Image 1 (cartoon, rainbow, N blue to C red):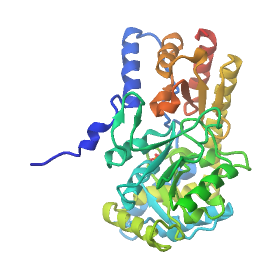
Image 2 (cartoon, rainbow, N blue to C red):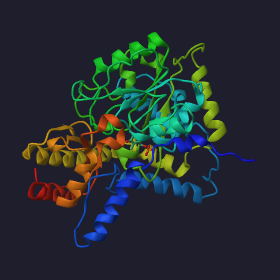
Image 3 (cartoon, rainbow, N blue to C red):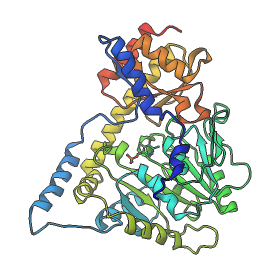
Image 4 (cartoon, rainbow, N blue to C red):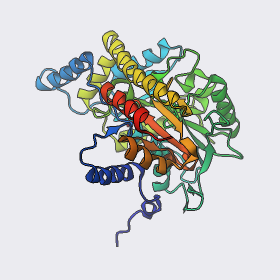
Length: 409
Ligand SMILES: *Cc1c(COP(=O)(O)O)cnc(C)c1O
């Protein structure tokens, strides 16, 4: 008799975005003439840039010609792209071998797939609030235990609260943990870890033989030169960290799909030699994955061309200008807001201390603006609300205008 993976049944009911969609639909049915302004899901909205489009077309043309056609590529990714990535990090002062880079179809799949190379009884620490994928993928792979309705937590996970008091960067875990998910710039809080903050975690990880899974999906949104864009800017981080990134937020590849995971040769865990963990990830990718699309990898190479980098930075600046408009708008209303400076998310404290979902309903009904309730990112997000800077300028401006005119606080 086939049995299903019952861990799926442990996932807490009402996944965030479907619930937002349900409430939005219900509202729109009752108010068909109201134009809704979406600042909710973290999805890119602006077109691919010309250099990237040329790269993708080149990829298609290569396949259209028997002389340049290619079938399966290396599971680890196009050699040239791995070299280009290695050079890109090197230009920022980080020495990594092209062999440390594994090209994939995105940071989200990598952030869950990476678990397969670590013991299934690993104790996992996550920031609270956090990108929901970290928790849910650990639940599905049986590392999270049961969900407690009362606490809003899984009993097998170590939650690391990110609060106003600690500037939304967690204190070190109490006791020993094995895997630590860190995301900076952070989704949803928009907080960016400093060198010193990351150093503390690197020291902890080294002392406890833990591994940091560092999600740098928003690294290109950092404009402050003092803030680290990669965990590998921290001394000795290569011995205890791996890093995940993608072109989704940097170059609008959310639908195109291209990411990478860096597993430095130096990385070690309990009882392993340098190189062993990298080999395991290589084995995992070679077995379960057949490489990223060759068309898309041509597009990725174009992102790292001189033109491509310039255009992608302009794209990031466009979204960050949106973030400024949001920050200015909420500040004018006296709402306390965080993030929004080196990250495309504005993390607001709900006015009057109302719950995240109550604020969602209030904002929707009074202003037609859709955001994301903080509590959907974990119990630590309760009382907060995320506004996303991804959107067309007109939409962001209309949303902020409506909030200014119509929100009753
Ligand atoms: C958007 C996002 C990603 C990107 O995932 P892709 O699969 O590369 O599109 C990864 N991590 C976080 C925290 C994100 O918000």
